[in-house]
Amino acid sequence: MPYTYNEHQHFEDRIYTLQRKCRTFLRACTILCVIFLPPVFAQTSSELRQIFDQQNILRYEEGASIYLDLLQQASTTPLSEELHQHLRLLKLITPTTDQIRSSLDALLQGTGGPADVIALVRWWNRQDPVPSTFANERIIEHLSRISYAFRHYRHQRSEFGVDARGEILIRLGWPDTQRELKLKNSGLYLRPVEYTLTRNEFWVYRRIHQDAHYLFVYQSKRRGYRIGTVDDLIPNKYRTRQEDAPVLLKWLDDIYQQLSVDHEHYGPLFDTVSDYVSIASSDETRPFYFTKQLLRDARILDNFHQRSRSEHVPISDTEVGRSPVSLRPEIRWARFLEPEGTTRLHISWMIDPKSLRPGRRVTRSLRKNGAQPTEDFLLTAYLVTRNELSAPSNLRLRQYHLKEGVNSPFDPRTWITRWLYGSINVALQWEYAWTQLDSLNNILPAAKLGFHVQALDSMAALNGDGQSIEMSDLLLTKLDEKGTPNRNAPIVKAHWNSDDPLGVYFEAYFLRFNDREQTSYRVSYEIQNADGVGEPKISASTAYNSESSTIKEHIVLDLSEWQQSQLVKLTIRVTDNTSGATVERATRLQLNTRK
Image (cartoon, rainbow, N blue to C red; front, side):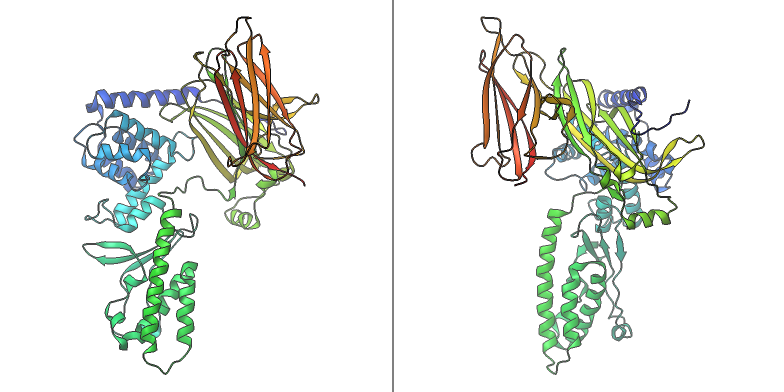
């Protein structure tokens, strides 16, 4: 019988475990073969290039696999020419302060080992922007950019084999706007060929940051295109000869006018030049001094922009997973210890349906592309468990039909994952869409509206060896009818009203028994400003005795005395009176007051 969707009915745990584990097993075998049997790799470098140079989309996933196989040979010297080139190109998209850069540099210098190769593979798996698919779309995007850059922006004398345009393309992708500046002033257009601009291109990435704009200027055949400024477009002779100042003024007016159309950074400079040109002056020396001052001001502004760009523009950017509507689920997680010593992970999440309404501009754009808007939405949530290489090993999904659209009630949901140990790596993915019916009247996703991924990488499992006291994370909850914390009603939101009592649930493990075969412990808590400044505003401490080495505690916090809305830090500490050992956990919450 085909599936049907009732209100909030979901399909849970459609797990592709076997496929994922087989894929992970084969990948692990591949790495072991690289370490111990390097000659087994027979893929040719030309095959990888051909897939992307020929834009053979059907083989892109295969190309990404070949690329990873190629990288896995990086600890075996000597490196092939193409492998060395790909390692160099990775320097463009890896931060200099990141640990992966150390592994990359070691591999390039021939001093790296299998651990560096594994670190590189793990890093690439964590870059995957769509963890719910078999393919690593970020690798495919990276290789597509490299292929285009080498076909259009190749420069043999560059460290990376491409000029500055190619480097930016590999880092950030294709620009939102791109133009070549040309002299359009009719008074200059009719003059001799010397009144032409150096070859140039102006790229703007508005989707990334307002500082992400680049003016590329052709330097010479030897140097190619470099990132430059308007100053680099002006021949020296027009800056030094007073009689050429009127021509220079027209140049600047024309250049800044075109640049200001594409980016507001150049607006003030264009206004300054335009205002001056519109005012006639009988003093023939004034244009010369004005242009000198203007170029000095422009250099100061350009220097400031370069510093700002280095601070705000990321080292790399992906266009995979961009969506018309910003989707920002709220999540909280807590780890608990199972009796056999493994960790159980609770990840609670929620989405406010009112935030799912697409704007008019988005709706119009999707309509133009043939989409049919609907009042209801189909929300899909994925939980992807990753292995030690951060490659997907298990996938679960749930789908929710929001029949009433933005007015649909939607309570927090919780993923529970068991039998975890060592380093925990999981990724959560959400997407929602308008709906459509298939031939059997099943509800299916239509035009995708929102998409979001959040990774929880390198989270340590709880220590279950029993040698020392251990504690779960703090689970914030609402209260049930009896006024006690309800573990089935977790609080996910980042903020809470101080007038409402707050429930906290936690567990502690491996308390020591005293001479009376009891455990004796003290629970203390404190709430203070998140910045840690000043004394705790709320604190308490209570002693307990128990017959068990594992305790499960509930605390109800009365926050009505809180006077000021601010981000607070809640810390709960458990002290074992028998052994003297102490363990604590903390969480943060935006506490709002109505006073």
